[in-house]
Length: 341
Image (cartoon, rainbow, N blue to C red; front, top):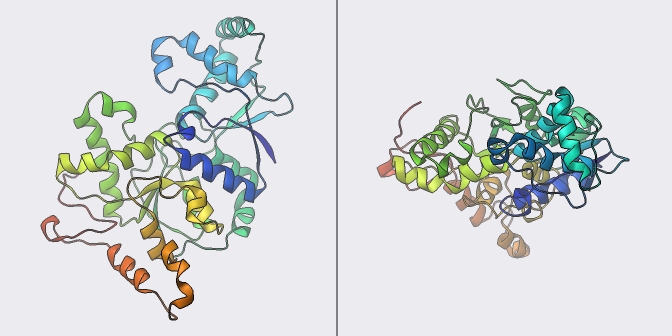
């Protein structure tokens, strides 16, 4: 299977783990991703708030330069996926917009016919085009014992996804079960993380983030798995500030769903970008799946049979706790007192 690939800006810097894991997993699954040559930024949210025509023209350029031999485009980033899909839809439904955008593209010797390229999210491709049997066939390290909270966010399931429920999506849940993971019933999985709200109003932004973390903790999730760079950034990078603001003690690892696919497929954690997140996920994964840390693996020829001291220690460190904040020394699923939603 061959698709055009639009990584977007975030996957080249702050969300490099997403790009690394997408490419590694796609390769194992026989999905050939052909990166668009000379792609440009999709503009995220800001372009459309300033000038819709300019936004559509800039985004449409990416659709126009997709290899003529390819008619499907995969965009892992939620904002990129939405913008590309929305631009194609706007051009198809509004002839005047289509004409103006193509006039702008014409200045660069390009043109685009709406509908020529089908924009898809990677989850859709994995679930629909490959399916359960193909995914299960690649699993060599089942995620048994790992409790995961799938987080869809806003822009993949709303408003234009077409492959899952916009209010209660389940496709990522099912995919993770195929890997052997225990998927928690995470009721806020399609709620907003706040997007760029951290730059506008920290109190509101922190409350949105707190709700997501609090729900994951209450349902005893080991990890939250994201499909969106902005969601992963907000939940991971601002977790410390949320703790300071609400006097909580969240310590929940936030990683991309493709990273856990890589783990289930037998790839080394470093191969799929683990270590780039701020709240370390490796100790939790190693403890739950019984994996030896890198240091322990290097010395395993001297270790006795059975779990190593390092493994036993990490199992203890990542054991969930329900003690009050003042009495708790840490844990992967713990939060201190916080206001309920």
